[in-house]
Image (tube, rainbow, N blue to C red; front, side, top):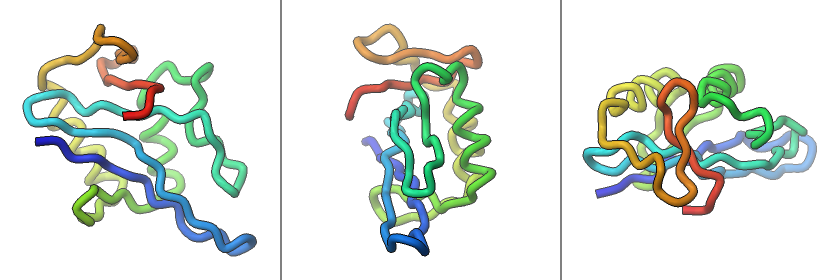
Length: 116
């Protein structure tokens, strides 16, 4: 069983747009797999940058700073701390690093730039 997680960017007061960005997938028995984007939100905030992405900790910092809700595909909502704690609990899962398009950062977190 797998569950997808999304960052729900709050509605912009200027343009009225809100975004839901796929941030990763948790599959039973495996490490959390982060989906790394090269996009910016309507606030001009860099969500992820492939050239600067050397650790998933940069994503954790972003989640804590902006404190936008994280929602799984079933509607369960998480704050940054709950989400990070959940990811940490699954760090001893089976690695997918080395499969096509899946990489590991310097702390062992796994990520992909590909759509999944």
